[in-house]
Image 1: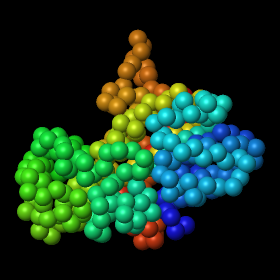
Image 2: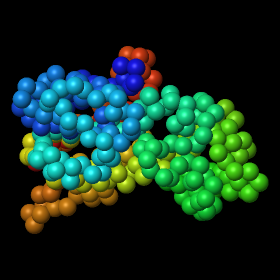
Image 3: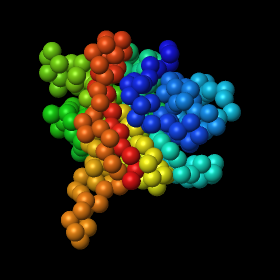
Length: 298
């Protein structure tokens, strides 16, 4: 699968505990690797897939049991209702950026190429990374890099960008690297740039807001016994997933009834996240930071 190699494929399929006649949703279709495997386990069941990236639509699967919806997964509940597909038996999400998006130079997701700083997953949306870097206030930039990139010197970084752009607009990857060169700790350049790019990408695509919408809607769309299977790639995402499974809330605080019984919407299937084996990482380095959590709707 050249477009994107599916991560933790067997674990995801096992986690979904597929009913051959059930209704399943892959909210991050991409190259279709997970979707194709799900279809192998269905007989009369249906698979609905979501992706907002125009490039992913070229991978559409020709199968009468498969429906591909070009939309952000934050509209999950309404669109499934429109397709008369509620409730569902399982939901899969492989969060983050696909290999294809990283490797396409003009998308601006990668630190490896000098390209326009775009970073939009949906190229019909208006906000780009260039817009963020050149129009946000110094304080807004600081907050983005601190919250979304967990950059240790976020204040200094924001200051460098804010003052650089007074003389020259930041439009390309190399422009950004030049602007923040003095903020980067020598020997840790790749890690630092990855954190900066992560923060910009999350802001441009409002990724954490969309994930929160998805997780809250999962409580409504899954039937009792339905499975929630989510792969995350960074701590901010994983924390949201872990907390919603644990308590039904993003803060993670578990409510109790009058008798002290915990009121939780999910039964946790994986006490600790499943991570890729050394073999999988050697074959697909982009799987390195993956964490898979599985839960069952009560």
